[in-house]
Image 1 (cartoon, rainbow, N blue to C red):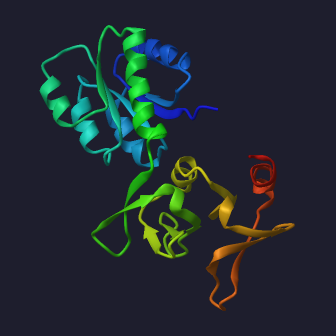
Image 2: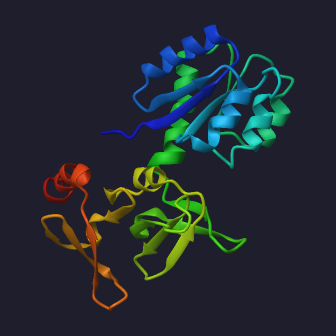
Length: 239
């Protein structure tokens, strides 16, 4: 199954936004999760939204698309534009693409395909902010074997890598990690594990390999009831 890009669309023209949404529904590689006609409202909600790609109208009242793109923490953007006087500003931001109005379906889908190739098919690494440090670390997603929500600040996630390294990632959503790492699956409300790190399954208790507890024994975690069916399907039936 092709992984769809979770997408947010922002355009102050409600009629155009409705047309754009219809085109997106016909695409096999994008899925629009949220739409906004007010860029200010989008800006307020953006930190809580989970999305891979943003479709942004360049020319909007109040806050234009180029300004929004610069405050989205490097979220990938496809600009939609009915005017060319902001093209230079838009290009300087290095969007995935710029699609002009009126939108042609084939042209829009080419932009979607480009985004999919960049964000899904060839995505191996993610750049994360590390807690208690000003530096960022580039982590190979497939190397993450265990994720646990930080007890002090639930917005942060502690991750263990195959090579034994451990990091605390700032403002990182569990959904982001499980959606982008091919082997991670959430096992309870606060933890996710790579299937290859599971050594033993005994009802609702998972024993991990490559990670030790404070007593030096292999770490054990609980498999939550609401996650059990999906975990077992992935663990025992997926090839």
